[in-house]
Image 1 (tube, rainbow, N blue to C red):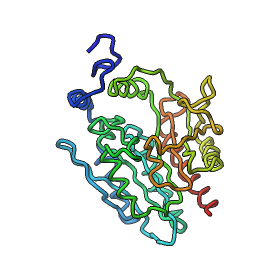
Image 2: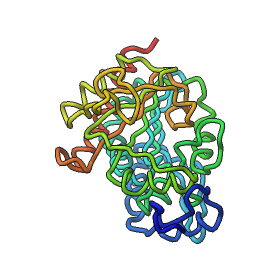
Image 3: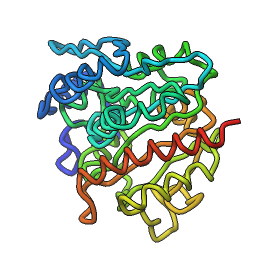
Amino acid sequence: MSAAHFYPIGIPGVPWGDAERTAWRERQVVSRRYQDDVVTRVEALADRFEVVRYGQLTYGDDVYPLLALKSRSWDPARPVALVTGGVHGYETSGVLGALRFAEEHAEAFSDRVNVIVVPCVSPWAYERVCRWNYHAVDPNRNFGASREAAESSALIELLAPYAGRFLLHIDLHETTDTDVTEFRLAKASRDGQPLAPESVPDGFYLVGDSETTRLDFQEAIIRAVEQVTHIAPPDADGRIIGAPLSARGVIEFPVRNSGLCACVTRAPFTTTTEVYPDSPRTNPEECVEAQVTAVRAALDFALAHRS
């Protein structure tokens, strides 16, 4: 490895092979437990929801059940709303926000919509507070033509029976300082690419799917969330993560081209949330509440404007 390389694994300009992916995996340290933080809370809701085990991941000696919560009062005549979290396991408020929504708010919508909550799509990464899965693959790039991530494929299979019935999908994410200090470096090294500078937006914003969603839907969520936490301003070029703003705190692009989770249902109302818990202007609890507020606002709008 060159002494000038920006990441401790790999050779500049050369994509990783199996040895580098193994070396990366060996750097990941378990710092929390999916069983304690997620499985226990999901199972505690078994009297109020149907707990669906939609798959299992076996990575080395670790085995992870993949769990979803489904409305007990399921009515085939109603549309379906999907809430996902933990597609990137390190994005904690997405996992905790999905769980809190299920625990405290989902039943209030059960007479109008069938709800599916998948709080932690990527449990191996959740435990290690990292973005990728065991194979150094990003699940949130594998909901389109690519099918490299077992986490993504399992979710696609879970949702397949409800194709054409989805009203809403909101995918809960967050951005942390490690996006710049770790992930961007690791990704560039893994792909044999030069390191491109990137900054972290300071605040909450949304990524809409320009092919399927309405801007007024995104704006309604922003109005609700700004009562809880601050909205990310654009950078000096008027952009957020390189994309032009469609509205305050909103960027849009065809997410299916990137294989993002938000494209998986083709619902008429879809969005991806992003909060920034490392901002000095917020805290982790506020970020969880912002996620819950976003889900509730999304459901309220979608139900009020369903065709």
